[in-house]
Amino acid sequence: MQNIDTLDLRLLQVFDAVIQERSISRAAKRLNLAQPTVSNALGRLRLAVGDQLFVRTGRGMEPTPLAVRMAEPIRQSISLIKSVFIQAESFDPTESTRNFTLYLTDLGEAFFLPKLLAFTRKSAPNVKFTTLPMPDVNPQSALERGEVDLAIGNLPDFQSGFYQQRLFREHYICLVRKSHPRVNKTFTIKQFQSAAHAIVLPYGTGHGIVEQTLVKHGMKDQIALRAQNFLALPAIIENTDMVMIAPHSVASQFSTERQLSLIKPPIALPEFDIKQCWHERSHNDGGNKWLRNTIAALFIQA
Image 1 (cartoon, rainbow, N blue to C red):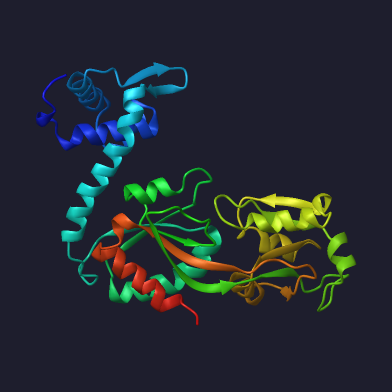
Image 2 (cartoon, helix red, strand yellow):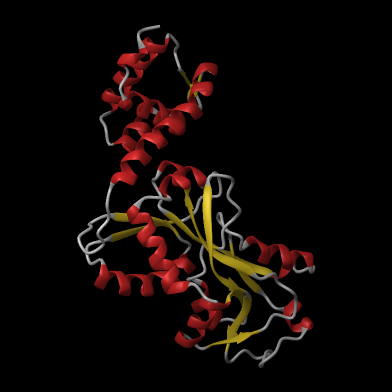
């Protein structure tokens, strides 16, 4: 083993990227480096620790037992070093050109972004935003690495190391077209159970409870459409006799924009909290703090 005192932070960043991606090329893309540069850095680290670290297999670059043991301490060390510099940065929203990345569903985009952008275009005119869908597998990792600043919505419970703030309490409502031949202002349980339903796949959110509840009430065969996102459904509901169940805050917007009626579902669906969540590494970051406070001021309901 070589003298590890000569190791630089970039070698550890390369290691962390490779073990996350299981690929030299994807690690290079994540780090914005040339692939030979990543291979060379990995070679230097192998010499330093006296271990192969990764073995190329049909499934990608598989870590050796030593690499597996090294992974979490290195990730924590990188996070700690980054947080020191992040906390030292001041944040002036009037001058900042920072890009904030948010986990938001399509519903979240429709509900949060218009009001948020109307405010920030005046108070922080050069700040930019990128939104990403929350993945089903390990959504915490991007927040831990600082690649995503905030997650907002009907979120699953995150483990220790995360902060969360409740914005408001939400409930589900049904949407049908106003000219629906069999539904007026209320749903009978028979009408509801015999109707064709359109639902949205949850993709890392808590909205899977809708399908679970329909199945529990023996309505699995009545689910006629499983769509990728909510925003495609209002046009479908407006032109069919299908029923859509959606959070009330956004459903009320849909009903004003289209020929749709809101009707209380005749079966019990749980209420849920809309929250914003962030990792502890970003808790003292001036920009993250400004964004959290802005969202709280705009959307918290008593």
